[in-house]
Image 1 (cartoon, rainbow, N blue to C red):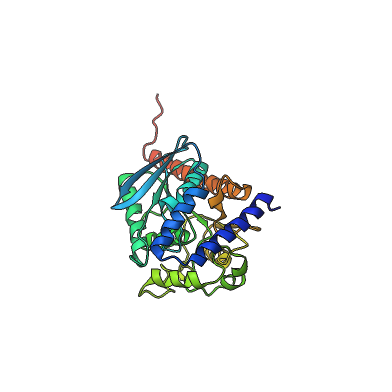
Image 2 (spheres, rainbow, N blue to C red):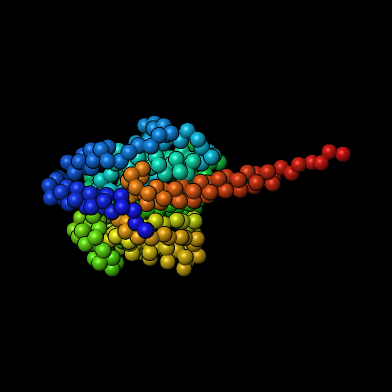
Length: 320
């Protein structure tokens, strides 16, 4: 049963986003407004250390829990329709997921459109992933993201597969945006109940700005049109009150049909990336906890497999 708190917060979020849309701010001012709102609304959890840094020439934040289950790394790619979002808007969510996963996270401030259209964001994610692999070749890496960031994580996994790189050990995706051509049914049928996308207008504009001269059906722009074989184990969380519901449902179906291990959980009454309200309502906390447990299991299992493979090359000699 949906909590009373989440019912209240749904109305609050819908009202505040409608007011922000009415202001029709230029994109730079809109980004600043979202940064300010995130600092006001999204609570940072205790027990985590935040360190700003740079990896492969990209601005990042390291999120380090006080208690860690292993040396693996969670590379987190934030949402924002490829035209917004930052470490500021997603620091709290990524921190909560890092705590739940009991592993350190790297939150990437990738380049945004329209200043930097496709493939700039993907190039940044790829460069950072490869630098992590170069510096720490034995550490497992998992990918996570929300909305456009979840779509970007999926595109990164596809590029790594196709270029023969060491793959991530897992994908944890919150409300992924996979079809920038906006052809799926719920882009229209769920718009009336979606606080973020009450029409397709904002998504259509963001898709054009991000894709630039690249077709919207390009498989690395819209993974909905990609071949999805050979991807790591994936967990998808999505709400039933969001326009991107079909992006998630069809992704899980296609991955499974193409031989991948993919699971999806659809949360009744939840809207787009409700997990940002972690610490404020139980549905957000339950989702973050389940995603974190999945990531911790995959990261620690992968590390154990790596050690077992290493030890197999050095058999112990029994003393006579």
